[in-house]
Length: 112
Length: 112
DNA sequence: TCTATAGTTAAGTAATTACTTAAGTGTTTG
DNA sequence: CAAACACTTAAGTAATTACTTAACTATAGA
Image 1: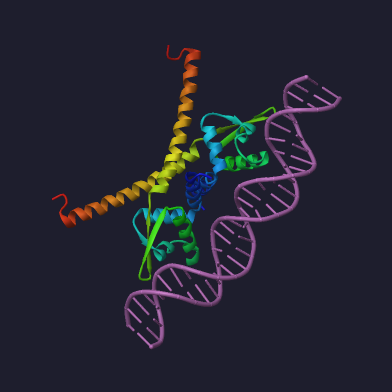
Image 2: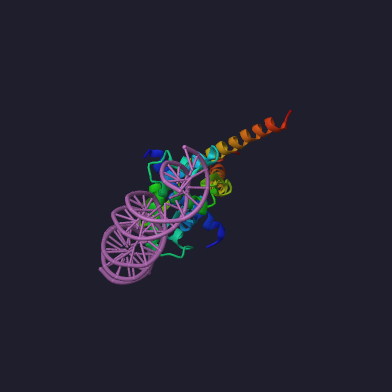
């Protein structure tokens, strides 16, 4: 599988869980520690660690540990790739609709 | 779980598989039958049917059967929801960076 | 130094996923 | 009517997922 496809697989998969999306939403407002991220979630701390692994393997989150605190922050590139993939498909689809429009125009004289 | 979260779950999950994304890319260029969608893929026809089920349950794809042919087409709303979710987070993140910029400006007199 | 804190690792489990092959159901077409 | 066609359903499987609890490591503070 091409590298780009694997990145899209991992990024879409990472975002398909609402606990992980909650982490992303929180990190979009600035860096946070693991326990800060865990606090509003209704799951155990190890479960949060596992979600962070998934987010880090997709590249959405980056983190470094200082002392005993791990600080997590958002890395925007993978989500931008996903956003662009969707936008590109939407444009293709919209272009296709335009061409249907042209055919209708030619057939029924809409613009003539 | 809120209805919006479930839609995001299903839509992100639907797009996390490269065979399903290939189906979406093909459909962005116009409607197609199940076997037309299957033709370039390296999996069995039942597997394609199962992928179409996933795409239809997320609402990304809609289809109707006429005679023995099922015609599939893209339904843009769910992907637009996903695109907006990402855009909203990016904007929050960018706003956060702007505020860091302001602090740096105030601290080091960047704009004064 | 003892203890609380912050997080990690390990191991187990029930549910879900992405396939497969085999055997259907209808629908055209020769 | 028979055979080819376009799927669909069923059943099975190996891998992955999202958790859990228990036990551990490493750092910080009293």
